[in-house]
Image (cartoon, rainbow, N blue to C red):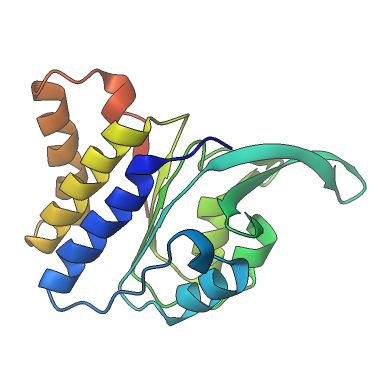
Length: 183
């Protein structure tokens, strides 16, 4: 996978924003972003989960047939839908700042993706992406979104104002339109 230089800067930005509001932050970057550490951090987060990494859907054998599994890349492997749905999470918001995080396996019950797994695990509101996102503009989007959340705007208004600001600054929809707020 290609390096994401802005993802680590984005994680730093988001951590600073929440620390300035006296919100406890566990930041896992590079070698510290191992699966065991990430799973533990997910379970101890009480406010916000923000994951900035590669996201993709991989073809795999699921329940005896070819299926598509949404995953997030970690330092030592992949975080799967099944890893997340089994957790008991307390955070009020999860942000998956990665490509294709709304993609997943489609069947009669809907789309099984990482957002659905987070909701099953207890997170009421999730931000995901519909398609591939760009590293630099994603950092800009996420920093703006979290700053607006901390300023007291509702999640919906923070999302809307971030999109409007990026649009009015001349950025094309590809930079701000892939993100959606669920819940």
